[in-house]
Image (cartoon, rainbow, N blue to C red):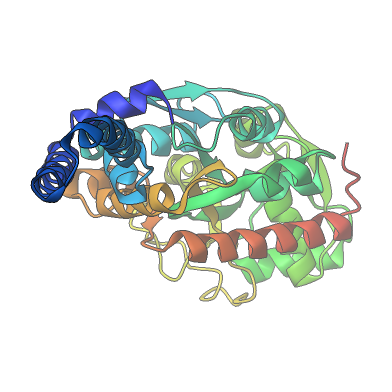
Length: 370
């Protein structure tokens, strides 16, 4: 037990009261024994020994680690929140909206730090290297479950992360070029089946969520397409509007303005219901492919072995944040997310299911982890 913890305890009113009561009780017992002790000279020596024992015991009581008190003290300094993607990305936006509200509830600043690279793996690596004390967190997207199918060391990193809270889901949209003449999802599937391998699709890069989402769609529908990777969603979207590629699966946030411009046609959106941002675009179930529903998830994770009391506290506070009107306005109305409210254990089960699903998709697409 450190000296700093002792000082924090001595500032706690409940600890001082308990310590005082303990000392007072022992003092009364010593006085009573003095009255009854036959040899007062020998008693003085015995009293000194008792006093030392009392002081030692009192300090031990003050320093004894009490889990509820520690949980109540957390956090007593700023918290770092890693984001594995660039400022302005969907993951970054979600992280900053949630962190701002969470900081108010925790009473400490939350510093968002972007650690870009390897599909978010660099931020995850820095997170698992940190102490599991609640002062280093990571806002994740579905990429954290996709990466093990793409990067060799990503499985090990994913295994060292502890799910804390699921924030919600962001729908994805399948689009085709406005020049294609295709208007429905069924038309696209029939067109692709008639020309195996000739229909192509763009993505933000090999192994990215837009790439893997289309691979999953092809697996569910039994169609073969050619992948054309770009350096980011922006380039892929520009290529789609120019008619350079046939199709693109993108997040709702990025797809909505492209569809609204008329230069791309939205064929289907993931989720249980249509999005208010693109109300004319049916869900995959409504369009005839209920088997496919791969929305992207966002959540908060921490280094493995985070104490249960801190895990519960963070989960409880994040779920409370997701009920705040201002947060819901930004993430639902402005971002198109469907927000969650699950325990850390339930989020953990979802994460394991996602890992298994994307591993299977990667194997089907013959992706060799690099």
